[in-house]
Length: 378
Image (tube, rainbow, N blue to C red; front, side):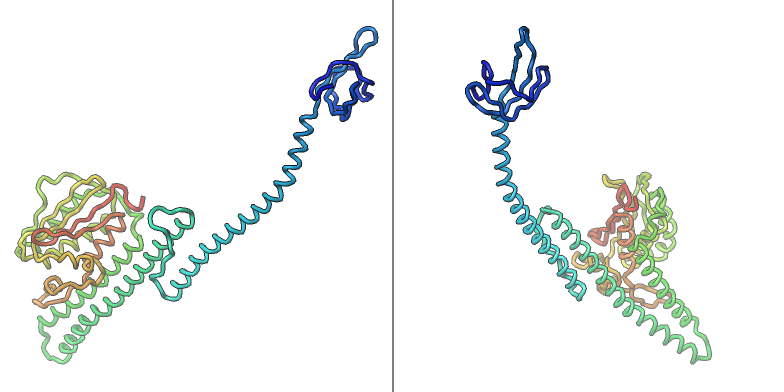
């Protein structure tokens, strides 16, 4: 009998195999040659009392099973060992990365606001790199907000002290005199108006930076809004000897925006141009459609702002030189500007998901507000 097939007579008929057509597995069947091997067999009755037994040796399958069993017995402990080592390595990596983030959190909590998570330059390599980069962006924003808060506190303390001191002095003077001077009353009113305007603008900036108003976005005709503002400020411009012009051929441009806040921002820009750019004798307003949305422009031909000072000008209570740091109040008084007009415009632009740009108008200052096609609220 061969390992796979054999033809001949059996020494004896397997007792467990009946003479029918069903298949049976014989664990150890002895052939005429004395071989003992497992077989899969089937039996059939033949004429004259003979019986036919057909089978196939299962020795190869048994050997394969034994080989697989031995291999599994060796590989399983190795696999378990490798799994344990891998889990330890991965756990150590996760602990180290998490410990680094926790250390940065502790440093920030202790007051070191410039602490950052160490991340590689370029695209993030894994989830921890992505989390570290997002964490650094959050820390930078927190540091910026706290710096802005300190600047606001210092600015309010500085800017409120002078007008309040002057206001108190004028009120004391009025209280001591027997005749009320109209010029002194006008000065008191101007000081009070300056204080109210400063607080009002500061409140508007805080509301815009907090995202208040995004639920009030609607379709706004920017060209009509610019035209209306030009008509409203035209008498003030004439009194200052300035020609307030709107770009000729301006087409209808619309955008989804907060009309009141955007109008307030443009009004502040026009007011700044009248205060500081009146020497140029002309202020230009324009609105145009861009590839990414819309752009609003207010340009004057005054002394302008140097390139190195433009970032400071966008901060609340930003301090510039004397040429752009004073304004005329009622009765001819010189009142120091609060530095809130440009910062309000910048906050409104950020509220809409846009940006504000200061550039040289050769001569003068050109302020552009770029609004996206889809506002931040959507």
